[in-house]
Length: 135
Image 1 (tube, rainbow, N blue to C red):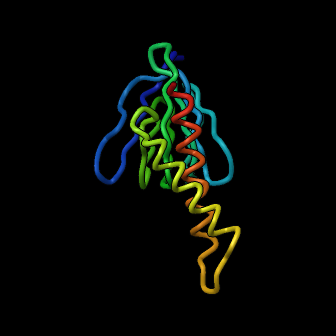
Image 2: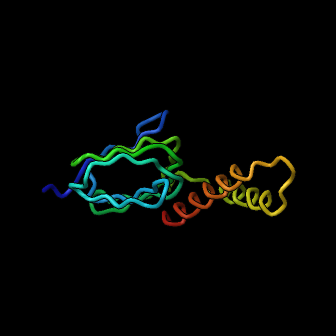
Image 3: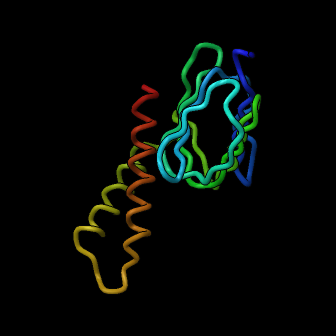
């Protein structure tokens, strides 16, 4: 059995990652999935959260927002709606987004989309968590 598998992370705009990795932790819709070489084939809906993978002995972090995961024996493909590498995250902007979402949830107004505010808060929290790991 191989020690690595190929990981691809794609958004509608670009290919972010295509490299050999030894493991990956991916936020699925109902919790995190841990992948190792030789993992059983699967398809999964993705959630929003911090993703991590190890390539060349170094752990790398990014944030993904929705999409799908396809896993084959020697290949994992993440097709996500949006993704950001931890070192590209604007922390100040993420803090403002988190604060705005929290304020909306604390003082809801009639007609407010609560699910949208909760998703915005979750995205901002994931962005801040990944950015903190990059320091």
